[in-house]
Length: 130
Image 1 (cartoon, rainbow, N blue to C red):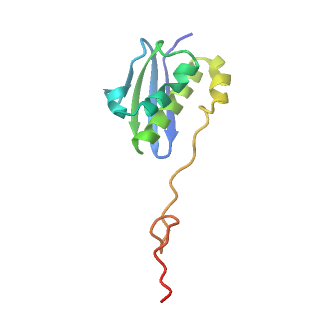
Image 2 (image 1 turned 60 degrees about the vertical axis):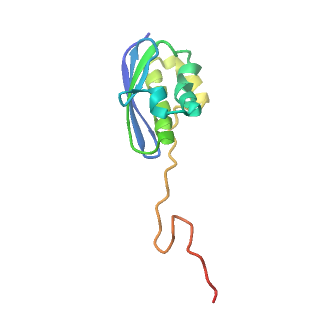
Image 3 (image 1 turned 180 degrees about the horizontal axis):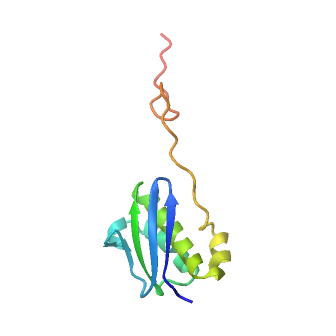
């Protein structure tokens, strides 16, 4: 059962809107092919394709993605989360596989805010005794 589905994936500050359409396996991110978007980072490409490989859907869907916020790594994580949710929306039988790999859980870790009197969130200025 292959139908069109749209979902949202999130990680850190990145938000990815994922549209899954039956097709040949083409992945387009912000108007570019995935390979061009992530540059020379095969680990990020592998991360994005992980839910498709696990559910054996690599060449069954075309994926159109609009992603904003965060860095390239967190965007890849958001895309992976969105693809996982779209696959689940498309076929409920994939839930056990995706859940066991932790792909349906939103990674809620975000950057800690900077505190006053400090350089960053926890780093302090150099202490001088005299």
